[in-house]
Amino acid sequence: MAMPDEQNTPSPDQPLNDKPELDSAADWLSDEDKLAAAHNEIVALKDQHLRAVAEQENIRKRNVQEMQSARDYAARDFAFALLSVKDTLEMVLKDEQSTPEQLKMGVDMTLKNMVTAFERAKVKEVKAEKTKFDPNLHQAMTQIESTETPGTVLQVFQKGYTIADRVLRPAMVAVAKAPDAATGAATDSSTSPVEP
Image (cartoon, rainbow, N blue to C red; front, side, top):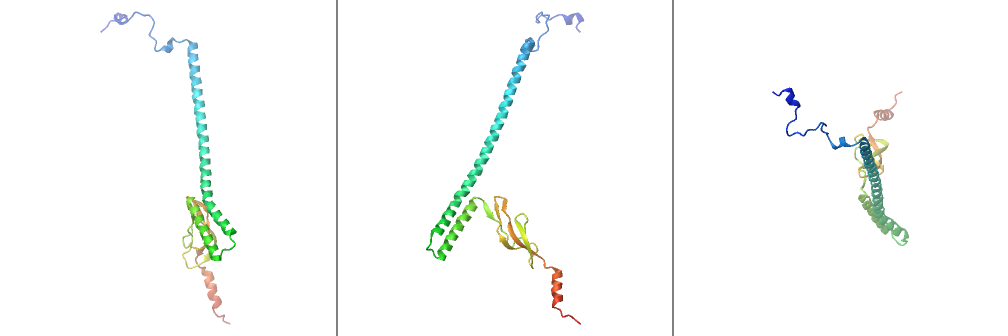
């Protein structure tokens, strides 16, 4: 065990120095130097922040431009596909010598061009007749008493369409409903003879 005197005596490898060791180079800096270093660090952080904000704004603007470009390009493709439909209709209107069969053939060709344009634009017809009524795809205009299962679409007044997975226009339909029991009873009583 070391004696108290021996603990305070420096070892032969230790330099004799009355000052305690400094932890880092920052301890040697004056207060003014420390303040200048802190100021430089704050300026650097502000600069990094401004650059990050500017980069985010650039990304936002680029995304807006890309979305607008995608919309414009999609409309351009659809418009280009419809040009052949317009051309065919104009040819039919200019032709004064066509027979009804030729006109019908021209209209049929125009319709095929229109269907092709719709397919390219992902516009699809809603299948409605003889299907179960779907409020997401169909708009019921009326109900008709029928022996069909209630809720079955009996008649289509106007076709519906979807674009991609969204409804562009719902189909306007007439839907089957069960025959009214009161109506059936009234019909039976009206045909029966009236007793005095």
